[in-house]
Length: 206
Image (tube, rainbow, N blue to C red; front, top):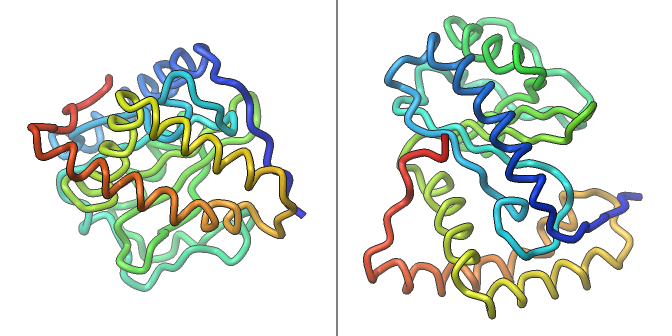
């Protein structure tokens, strides 16, 4: 069974992001050059005032993602399983650069290969999401964050749902994440309307 633990907002989370994000930028710039377009703090730990699982989510945006991706690579069935690196070509340099910061590559996620996922579970819990600049999932992560930062009612509604769901028993953490879907998509619909007033994502947080 997966135990979901929410912690009150902690300002240390921003400092943790700055540490991890700065290390990622320093490691990736020599490899990606101008392909690296942004390093952002996303997820609930990026929203002051909201309870969250104490895991720092970092989004790394790259200008051209396809050359770094194997079309036959799929996510492992179990998070502990390490995916094969066979025939990934120049992608090896990107993986090595991220892993030099202490993160571990978990493989491609999403059926259209829009995201690579890395994580770390030792001194600091981190998820690093590598996405193509401008793709829907890359933009949604920033829009959801920015809307929650400015809308107290949406922020409270999201936290209430998270707390109610966290009190249940789940076979997998992914089941908990899926159960938040209706709330998340409802907030994204609100955020989409809000964005029409002139919202643009920040180019980078670091």
